[in-house]
Image (cartoon, rainbow, N blue to C red; front, top):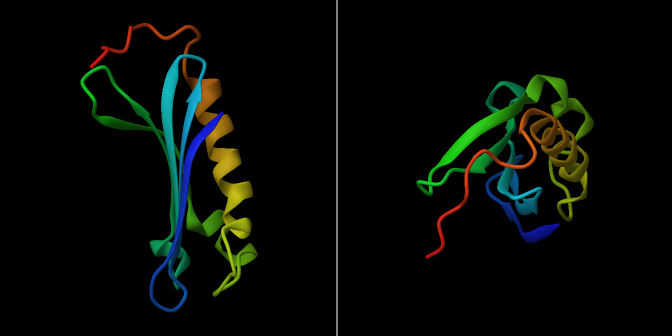
Length: 105
């Protein structure tokens, strides 16, 4: 379940999609950052730990997907497939149920 989604366009060729998911007892954040250069582009999935820190559990370098994305998109659509792939990889890595109980604030 997607809880929050933010799309941001920066300078020429620079844009980013951030999604927060609640999945199988975890809070997962997926960030896909597109830059003008593939080597500076990345996609990561992070899990929120019981200490309220983010830990990277899956990633995808821009070299694998950069050429399939436009330099200036009208919206987040070109990054959604990349975000979904990294999220699915993260979900396969994490144990279900979580080995911890997330503290309640």
